[in-house]
Image 1 (cartoon, rainbow over the protein chains, first blue to last red):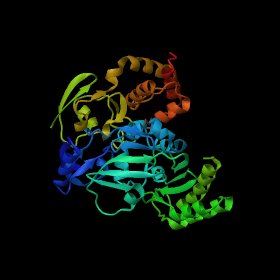
Image 2: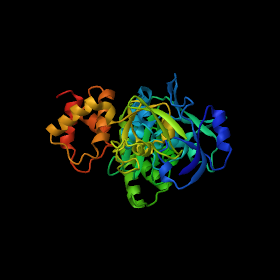
Image 3: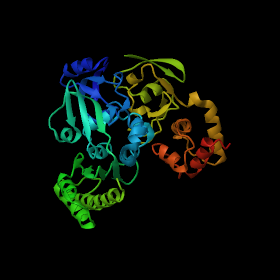
Image 4: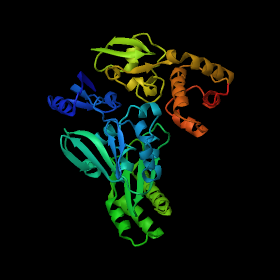
Length: 267
Length: 150
């Protein structure tokens, strides 16, 4: 990515006006992907002076600024408490500390990064994205939305619900992208299953979830069936990292293990 | 465009392009202790401290550090002396290319984590690669530094 100008926005209004002033203009998140793209932009707009790097814990939710770094996110006490800590655990496994101190939560989400270990666990929670000037949308709906978004992601609202979560990233080393990542939560007895890096962006296994949440009592056969349903309803494909069959085998195994783990944990 | 920041507590002014990364800016100004390893945010050789926290200078746009504090090994010389003595004591020195980035990460670790376990130390340093060694001797030296066992 090359750009001709750099603009440090003084307000959200200023940021959006600049963003819209040329079709090629871009917003900067953490900036880790600039080098990986061959695209050219007129102006890169920086949101780092707009106070979007704060995390505020409220009574029933946590408000996370889009420019909060992955490192600040994973070390925040309120985030560490979410679902028994599975979100903080997931984010804390991404590359090294020095990368996580640059990469931003909003950048991962806004770009819908398909291999993201941030999006998958968040998808199993109640997360609303707040965009400037005026839009609120659930994370799952944003991920499945099409077209170029010109609104500015400013905050995530994460609802605090008691429960427990599971996260697993499958990869050869800490520095690899996930061959598959799996997040499962059980919050107020409601089960959610998300799979990412299939290699598509993370998605919920809604049919498997509906089946489990319809069970009066979830037994081993229900877990087996839900894992099979999740593999059947989501799309998997082959990349140089992992084949489609391998990903499906991983999904089957880890959805089952994750469900066993969250169900064993009394909520 | 002109960027002003602090390098090891001294004012630093550089003329840069909006696309320049801090690694390039520093090396262009003869701050060659900051190493260019992979140049794609994986190896940690280019680590510097931004307001006291380790970041990858290969992936940080110079224009974004306006007014901020950057620290390289030259700014932590007392700790570097202790660390290098410990590295030599443990026979941990090989080619030295990763040492400067690692030293800064270890310096930040010591200030950020309270009584870290071995596992926490290893997890903190995941992003600082060494291609010479098996990490064991470095790890012994780092543990002694973090726990003030000189």
